[in-house]
Image (cartoon, rainbow, N blue to C red; front, side, top):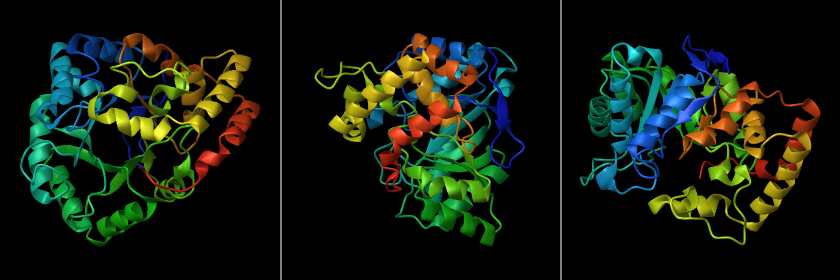
Length: 336
């Protein structure tokens, strides 16, 4: 299968139209399985790998950074020159240590965090460095000046943000322009058939500013695979029962309304003769403002249905039915 490529926003950086999310590596999946997931994704044509210093998802502070370490060892296992074949993105802001400055978007933390990430990834730079969330306790200009320092020092090529409200992102862009700082080139929001709130304000802003959009949770934590049932408690080591993250995912998606919608979506997928996971990712990709949705997996075979979305042509009539069925999920505009 060939996965097409596109530019990241208005930059000259070319990335695959699917990206691999890695937050399962190191807790939900061990290193050997993580390597197999990386192999499967990259052999299929994915060249865009996203991680964060706070990963693995659901872990405690003492194991943060484990995911980056796994990716670093995988890159080294591929031999000389492997690093240049991939676009590597990571993020900082989450709590990664015992000190009060081991989190947030202060200049001190970001400059420390990038060095720690590079050491774990075993590289001298990342292609994209992102604020994982909006740290309201730190002035935006301080955070953006730190990102500018990181780019000018050669430790990152581009910068972006994740989980920002539209008005805060607009303000950040304005501050960067006012002070002639490195421009934010992309945003990483939550987006799926079960969470469409970004269509109201964030996506129009991304369109106006020429930002790349790298959505996470395109399968709503796995609910859009159709494998979960409301009357059956999720198994251990799934997204809905995973360490410190399980309750967050249950709060997001584990409710009567979501399951009712998934049942209707599953019927449409069966009618179209395609797995629901393929249909869900294809729907995200069909939005012209989306650069590349992030695909996650805890087993290599889970990528079969999601990678297939790259070759699936979503019929316009079916897309309209999906849009209409999930229209209620457009309300609001919060990252949560």
